[in-house]
Structure formats: structure tokens, C-alpha cells
Length: 389
Image 1 (cartoon, helix red, strand yellow):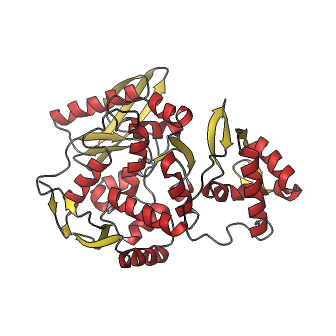
Image 2 (cartoon, helix red, strand yellow):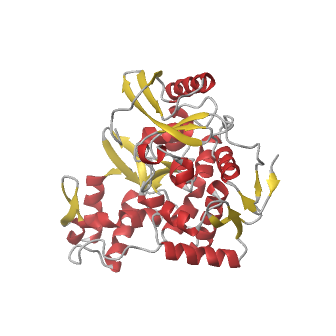
Image 3 (spheres, one colour):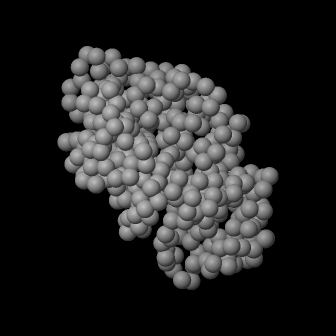
């Protein structure tokens, strides 16, 4: 039975996280299930949109990628924008004021671009104003948006000075994250193979309130956690995170517990109910690339025990391989290859699975097929491809 405690062990913390992330009992299907789950996870990583569709779809009973796409492009209860770590996420649209308010308040990196390339504060403001105007009521490709920004800001905005993947980008594009965090830039639906952008019309929450709410939500989802854990999740300054946690503790927004194997850690104020010894996470789950659970849950050496720490791997931000979870811990990796409707899924367990676990794994593979609107077939063996394959 759940108990109120000041000392939290790893099995209890992990079991609670798994249940709150929809990885224990799947969420019931409902008109609000997709955005509610995106809010609970604090976003689904969407650099590869199909991975975000799996992250959300696998956690909702009977859901498919159509449900995610409907929430994103028709109902607009999701928004695709730059989220934690500056990477593209699907976020609950209702949370966009919190995200933009908090992310715009993070300590910035000074001098990322050479002085001759860098935008001044005035130029940055001019670009953000131009982006907001150009994208209001419109969905523009990068080239179309560049034309508008140059026309509205001046020729300097279009100077090809930023090193890019193949060639050079115009100067104004270094302000894209700033525009996103000020609530005037998000992704629109692709136009063929081209990405489009639009103005979501978000009014950012006041920074202090937004940061307090983001920390509270993070600790509810992934606590107990330390300021270092929070800083790693956001890819920001540890010293800044320590100062933020100290301030929130003084305001009684968060409270301290003893996290066994970690030491002092934090939970949202009053959120000290954890499963008892019998509440160990149970089951078999497949998580796609950069799933929020694998990235945000700490400490990594417990979530990725033994060989999993190097095979997955768990360094950096993790997520380079899709994960096999067995009883709540990483126990292997997997890979999928699609050809038409057929999806070949290869799962590499790091230890032998029982007959019951293999049966559950088969069910997970079938769910991948359902979410992706295909027919998935399971092979158990070595994953021979590299990360991001």
C-alpha cells in the first residue's frame, strides 16, 4: 500500500514514476488523453515525429498515431515547438505559457556565435517582432520566413554567416529559439518534405511563476530529484538550479526527502506518498528514441543497471537507442525497420526473458504495429545498427 515517508528507496521512486508516466496501467482512451499525457510526461521528444507518436500512443489504451496527429494539427491541444534542452517536443498546448515563461528565464550561453555573427539585443528584438508578424495566420517554410524577416528587419538579417549542416544559414536564424520561447514561433504541418513554422500566439507566464510551476511539475513526474538532475534534464547551469531550488524550498513549493543511494533530494511540497515494498514496478515495455522516462529519470546507474548503462547508453542525455524496460529498469535495446505496412522489430534483451516476459514483449510489439498503423513482427536477437538508426 502507498505510504507517506521521508525516506524514499529506488523501487518506490521508480514504481511511482512509472505509474505517473502511463507505463504501468495504460491511460484510458478519451478526447483529452493525448494532451493530458503530454503534460504528465513534460513533453514528448519530437525531433523524429514518429518517436513522439509512439511515446504517446503506447501509453494510451488503443491509441494510434492518428490520435496524436489529430491532437496536434486539428484540435491543436498539442503544440510542436522547441522545449527542454532546446530540442523539438510535442507539448500540451495548455502548458505553452509555462514552458515559454520558464525557458526564456533560463541562464543563457554567452558568445555562442563569434562577435561578427552575433545578434545584438536590439537586432534580436527586431527579428522576434518580424517573426511574430510574418507567422501570424500563416504557415511558412524557412526560406519564405527568411524573405519576410529580411523585408521586415533589414538586409543584415539575411547575411549568410551561420555555419549549418550543408552551407550557411542567414544571421536571423540564431534567434529562432528566442522567438519560440517568447511564444511567437512553433512548427506547422510539413508541406511535403519541407518544415513550416507558424505563430502559436502564446503569452508567456511570468518567469518566476513559470519556473516554480515547471520545477513542481518536474518533481511530481520524476521526483525525488536533485538540482543537478533538474539541470541535466534542461541542459542548464547546476549552480543556477541550486539557487532556484533553495528559493523554492524557502517558499515551501518543494520539500526535502532522503533518497536512498542519492542523499538529500526534493519532491513537490506534500507529495510524499510512495508505494511500499510490494510496489515494485512490474511488466515489459518498449520505449522509442529519447522517450521522456529514460531521459528524465535519475539516477541513471539505477535505471540503467549493469551492462545497460553502456549498451543503451546512459551517458549524456541518453535516448540514442530505443529501450526495453523489464520490471521498470532498462534491460535491453530494440530497433524497428519499416517496409510498407510491415514493421520488423528486433529486440536485444541483456538477460534471458521468461516465457511470461516474452508474451508481454509480443504484446508490446503488436501495440507498436497498432500505433504506427502497420503489422509489427518480433525477432529476439542482437541489434546490429548504431544509435539513431
